[in-house]
Length: 528
Ligand code: NOJ
Image (cartoon, rainbow, N blue to C red; front, side, top):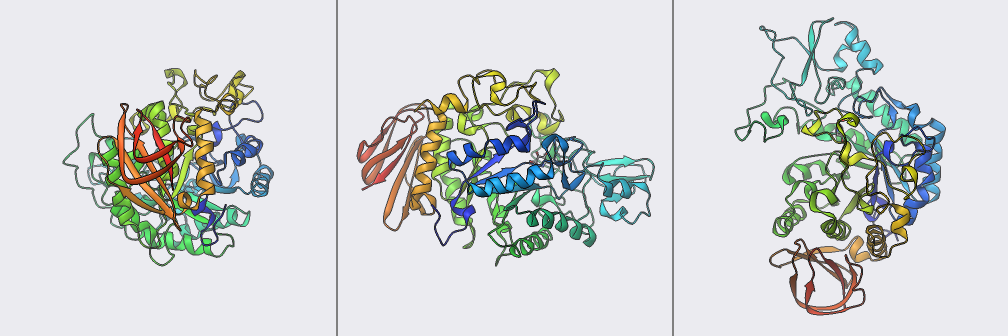
C-alpha cells in the first residue's frame, strides 16, 4: 500500500544487504550482485521496499569496501556494471528500490586521487586530502584519534608530512573544504543517480568535514583505560558535527532533487538526539533520514526506551520523518544482544514504531553473532575493539550445504545453528522468526495507522512498554514486555482483539482493559 501524501521511503521498509554475505552466485564464497538479483523474489515476498546495499565499488578491501578506489566502477568479486544495471531494473520490476552506500569521508589509499596527492607536495591534488607538517618535535599535527584505534595521522616519509585518516591508514580522509573534491564527489553521486538508483546511505556523514584549524580535541574526563572505547580518549569536538557539514548535505540534497522519483538521502550519524535532528536541515536542504541508532545505543529497558522514544518524537522538526534502526554491519546482532526470545519483541517494536524501519539482513531469521575462530578473523582486528566479523556471516537460506549461500568455502564461517534458522525451514514453520516478521510487515504495510499514523505513549510500569498508533480513527495498541517474567499491561479503556503476538498464538483473542503478557511477549491489539 502506498499513501499518496507520503514518499516510498516513508511508507516502505528498508532492508540492508551486506553484499559479501547475502548470496554467492559463482561459488567463490563471497556474495555478489547476481546473487542479490536471484533473491529479489524473496525480498519482495518479505514485503520490504528499499534495498540498501553496502559498498560493492572498486576496493582493495582493507575495510571490506568502505575503502573505495573508484566510486564509479564495481569490484569484480561482486560482478559487472551489467549486473548492476540488471539489479536496478529487476528490482524496479518488483516494486523494490535500490539504495547505494556513499563513502565521502575517505577514499582508499589506492584511489588514483590519493596516489597523485601523495606523489609530491606540489601535485595539483595535494590539497584533496588533509596533509600537515609534523610538530617541531616530530609529533602528529594534533591529538585526534582514529575510530579503529591509535592516532589518526600517518607519517608519509616520501613527502615528509602527515595525512589524516579517521579510520584505517589505508583510508585517507578527503578534504571537503576543497571545492574540486566536492565537485568530484557530487559527480560520483550523479553517476549512479543517472543509472537509476533510488537513493544513498551516506557513510559517517557527520564527520565528513573537519575543523578548519584542526584544533586539538579536549581530553575526555570520563575516559577509563580499558573500559571506554579508545576513540573517546578525547572528545571529538573538532573532527565531527562541524557547522559546515550542513552546506555539503545541502549540495547533495539539491542534486537529488534534480532527479524524479523521490531519491532518498540517508545519513549514518551517531550523535545524541538533539544534534542528530539538526541533520534534517531546514526547508528541504537536509538529509531525508538521519539514521536514528537509539535502539542500538540505549540500554534495553522499558522505561529507558519509552523516555528515549518520547525525546526523539519531541525533537523531530515538523518536516522530519522518523526512522529506526535495530542493527547493522558494525554492531552486535539484536538476537545476541537481548537474546532470541526478546529479539522477537524488538522486531515488533521496530515494525510498529512511527517511522521507517531498517532491517539488517538475517535479523528476520533470528540470526545471532557467530563466534569466529582466531585464524578466520578478517575484519581489521582493532576495529571497535572487537572486530565486526560475527555480525557479517553468510545469510542462511537453507539447511543444505553452505546454508544455500555458497557452493564453495564461505568467506566467513556459517552459524552452527543454520539448519534451524534459515529461510527455507522458517518459511515452513508458522511460529518462526521469519513468520513473525512476515506477519508484522504485512500488518504494517496494510494498515495506515501502523505505517504513517500518529504515535502516543501509554503510561505503564515495570518491564512493559506500550503505545498507541492512530490514523483516521483506526487505532492499534502495542504492548511489549521487555522482561522475561510475566507482566500485566493495564491500558485504561482498551478494548479490542489481538492482531499478532510475538508467540504467534493469540490472534483474535478479545482484550478488555488489561492484557496479560508472558515473558518476552509483545502484542499488537486492534482497538475496536
Ligand atoms: C561506517 C561503516 O558503517 C563502517 O563499516 C566503516 O568501517 C566505517 N564507516 C568507515 O567507512
